[in-house]
Image (cartoon, rainbow, N blue to C red; front, side, top):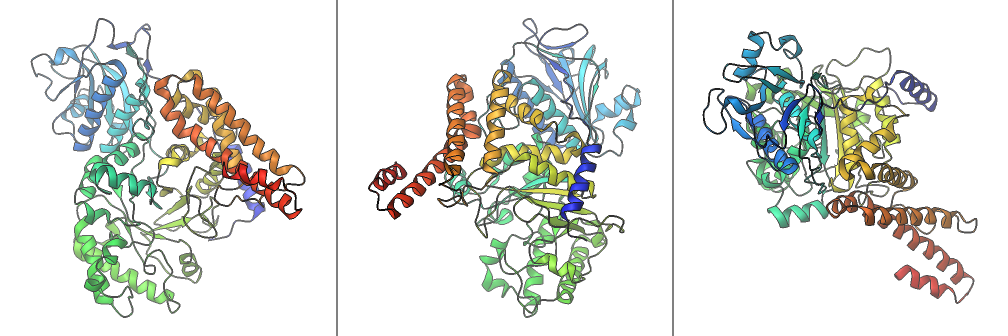
Length: 618
């Protein structure tokens, strides 16, 4: 492992600029006007059709298909029927099937297509989370004519293909979380050809809901009664629509597994892999221990090995049979360092015992259960002191809590066989000051650090601390798109991404101006976070403070003007993603600039200080 010098970072960035390919917009296979050779889904004459998907399919795929039915209703005011049998008769019989959906490992229809050589098995067999979208003529017995085929290599591959169709007909992945209305279209056509996004570059791609009180915690408690499956179903769906597959759930006051027994099974069913955060080992939430200290004893492995081993064993027994990644090793009580007498030998023994428990409970080698060790905060020091980690365990590297990568694998040195991941922040509750209120992340900086990360071979896991999620839609969207294909982005096309994000939420007519405002907002915020800004941040005498405050006030004027021009149904999303953050920061800058004026004039015994005091209050 090595520290990254400024010179090395510059050299690596130059390499990134050379290697990164040009961002290409996703191939559009959906058209809203009739073109020669297209497949008709919805027309003025054809107002109904059916989707064929076998009952044997993964439950998570069937959930996505049901969501697709609703998405068609939002877009075109029709709700396709779901057919499980190609020969099923009635109003939704085989004559009316226009879409066939199936997974390579489960669907009998996909097996028939492979057998009849209408689908090349090599495109899907052994692939990870890949989908193929194309058109096929007379796909299976009982289905005449041409249909749209969505075939996945596995459960998530198929789900991603389903949600790609949803996105292209006009449903934003953020439709629920950011109140983005669906685009309305009277006609929907499918272009001929083969579409695929290939396989993801990073194996595990996800988010960490953290620092979730008071905002997210208060909201979900009032609306759903807590951090339960009624709320998490929306998190899981969002992640899948963004082609993510991994989640560290909220943990400040919540116990994901214990608070709602359906949280974990629902995630597994839908296709989301669950883990526990960097300080919560063995599939146990810290709150499960905090609520039961008398049961398990002190959080001290030296004095209470039996109690803690029991706690660990119960976690592995509960997750058995599910697709999860186990965090191993140990930190102090809560998100804190271990005691001063902790050494690498003790931690190595803890890991050894944890892996023994994993092997005993699962009945197979511990290496068969995915595990990670997070080098967060002081834990990196144990690694530097030579702590040994089993070859199959992933090493999760971390940024410095502010978006700058702390450590990367040393080039030319043998890679750790278990691979490397990256834990990255767009939210922090901690020293020297938190940044939690609004999005403070400039994606240009995020791209530079993440491509550096990828260039050094960190591709096993990327996980993003999103705080309470809601203020960080934009960087979350970018992070997960980049995790799928880092080579799709370079320094020259990040505004193309920003514009596409805005087009998806606000429509093509408003995308350019919205992207300009959003990009400038992030640029201005990257200078100093809201929480670290005060009346001393900028120089008042030189005019610097007024200049930066005026920039935000001008940006606010532009955002308010665009808000007034938007259709009524687009305004909620715009207010959440752009208008409120811009207004909030403009107000904050104006307040602190007025505070600086008040302090200066008061120091000079100038009565005009009272005028500026009034401005601070109002």
